[in-house]
Image 1 (spheres, rainbow, N blue to C red):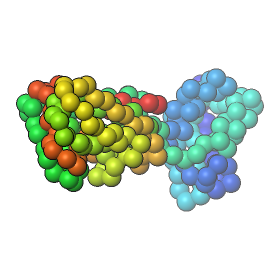
Image 2 (cartoon, rainbow, N blue to C red):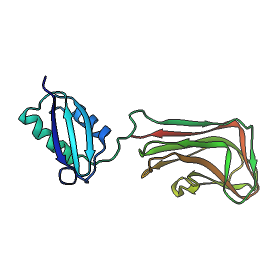
Image 3 (cartoon, rainbow, N blue to C red):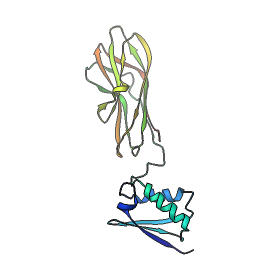
Length: 201
């Protein structure tokens, strides 16, 4: 085998004028049109130097140029799916405040690498005559409006809400289930509640 290297202009050869080495190596590895391994990617200024373990055929060179042209330069999403659960520990918490407060133990910190997240909150609650309150999912301290539910009934009831979170930045995010009371009080039943976060991509 004869090692080979190819020099490209980052600004002129890529989609967004940027290179992410790890992602580009993975894209070459999974390309059905390139049978040689990309050993390294080095950048200096506008130059990108691609080193292969063997010399590319004309067809592989053409496939490489097309692949680099479509390369976005964004870091790859995590290969492992992110699944996080918050489990209730405190027994039968109650709350009567008008401001949204985190339901006991219903907080999770998640880093999906920017991938969308499906968040689901579910639990059992005790409602007495005159109770009126809301529950919602919060992302980094801000309410997710579509997840907000109003609760007003009498008895022990199961309750569930969910949200699909998109456009997340590549950092750890705090996900919470909160409640706010307009009349009476909000009461959780036993420890029957959970907050689940699952990566969609």
